Image (cartoon, rainbow, N blue to C red; front, side, top):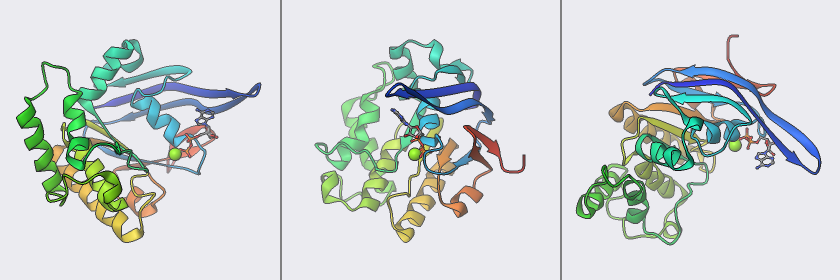
Length: 229
Ligand SMILES: Nc1ncnc2c1ncn2[C@@H]1O[C@H](COP(=O)(O)OP(=O)(O)O)[C@@H](O)[C@H]1O
Ligand SMILES: [Mg+2]
């Protein structure tokens, strides 16, 4: 899905002071492309991703995904749009601790609107197939705390791809993993991404990973800019 970002602004107010984080962000992500966003800690990468995914409201500007104006939708409309089209991978995995690996992977399927939701047996089968795909077929009954960081991130990848989202956001997906485990996660992410033809927007501190994307945007002065510009 094509993403069109126009004039996005975001400020946070605290203790009577205003912190301007995003100052008029404009860019387009072509459908099927892979974009890396890089920049120093605190430059607004996570904030921007949250807005692009419709999880956080911008102070101004528009985000169009596949032609749909995200913030013209109602809250419920946005939640449904997310469930149908978007996937996420976070630095800290964000698995639900009270659910098993398989149940975590089932969650996005269970959140689909009734008209698109598969029957329970198929939800279970699909979750198992994706766990298999990330090499955790035997670990579906384990809880997140019984899994290593790399294994938890593999569960998170299965969860992100199980709905075959058209657009995937990943916020420093290897940031909490050692180098070797991180490299394996990247391989898997790239494989799943290729298979599904997903549009990918990824925040990373890993220069090698950034360079392997089609395009790199670097944050400077509240705006992510193309490397060469
Ligand atoms: N909910 C919030 N309230 C106040 N300040 C925030 C909030 N979220 C983020 N910030 C501030 O916005 C800036 C950008 O944060 P963030 O988007 O997390 O940066 P990055 O992901 O690039 O490290 C930081 O200075 C951070 O402290
Ligand atoms: Mg961040």
